[in-house]
Image (tube, rainbow, N blue to C red):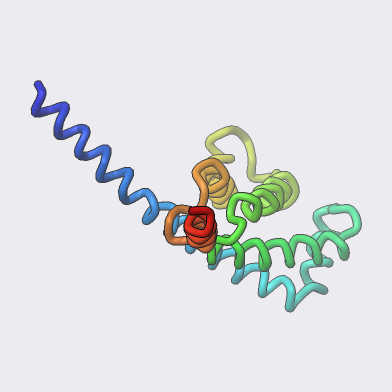
Length: 151
């Protein structure tokens, strides 16, 4: 029995030591996705504005600029791991708005919701908000520098 508990403990320690990998992959994946979509939207604001107008989003021009630059800037911050927890929050809001406006006709129940890529983004962003960006981030580097300067 002790052998089993020892194995479980070693597995837990290994998983904890690799948490930075999972958080890094999550940040890099979503960061690149949002940089890509934000870049495309910023360079085609007229199309995004027209689409937002079709969806009935109020002030479509202003909201197109807001959503486009939110994806580009927050995606970049997420990718490099700077202010990651804070940067994830506007992206969550953007995805909630996307679900409520662009995807609402596809929703007929919880299974439809969890099947949306936007929901997956929300879930991953929530993990980043709660757990932080991980050790392979500018946030972690700055924290280490701050700790070293305080000693």
